[in-house]
Length: 386
Image (cartoon, rainbow, N blue to C red):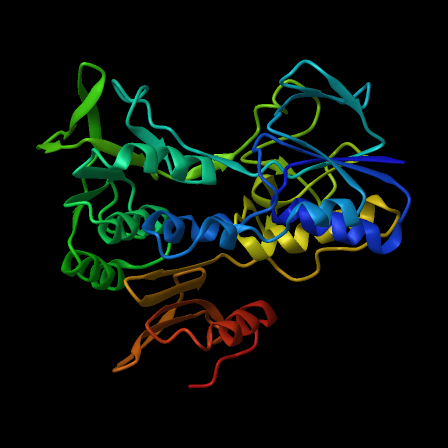
């Protein structure tokens, strides 16, 4: 049997390990547009700041692929999936046959449509390659503007401050930082933390254009003002990498639609990770977190080798970030009939309860040690005693 895996992230690697638990002889091929072995993007900000070396990013080296007898095709993207022929077409024009296919291609940075956004000095912040490109231009840049105040944007801002950049500005069109993680009060606490450490935060603003002179960035403008800028980072969110799927019969919505077995509408095609969309508490959605990718990849890997495993644990939204030494954790849905708040010297905690006193969601700043407990209570729907 020939198994092809598109992607080389946590879902892909988890699938490989699951496959090899039950099938030692099938052929496995991993295809990735990046020319790197498996690494974590969670610490690329620390790599940019110089806090860690590049080799700390890698979670597997080339020996892993040899030991698992996995053929790798790196630096070569899948451009099309021919469902009827059971082939994938690569960017170099070659094709590869599969018996079973796992789509674990992850997500891409969302690039806003702005005048002059294409060209020198504008970077995404998602891959090792992005960081290398930024570092190559950073010596001549004294002013950096980051578009987006989600956790990726704020981590990037901290990295630039630690790197010694004199002017770091974050522009967010929402009314608060970390808009998908925190409510207004908690977000204001984080905004203050960032500003005290030298980051200028502009919320409720939207970038309208990038100005250039002789091809180089000089300014970024909002409706209200102009900000000097020599280097720009796009951190406006991510979207599933669906380009290879749009012209075939694999069903997509926000992502690739899968059932509880991580199987698409095509029986021999599975999907997992940031690209997969499935039901989360009665709502179809994607859930681009590391745990989801690892769990989904494992389920897909087992099922591609003949098992019938379900993703039994309910998906729960969860995001975590540490900014200038302060931990932030958001779990579940940030709404409910009742909100409990506690603040002390260790930090701030907000718990949202439903009509049955079960926890819908939690926001933690500072002390996040009980995050695992709250996640378990949310998933098990156990009434919370207080």
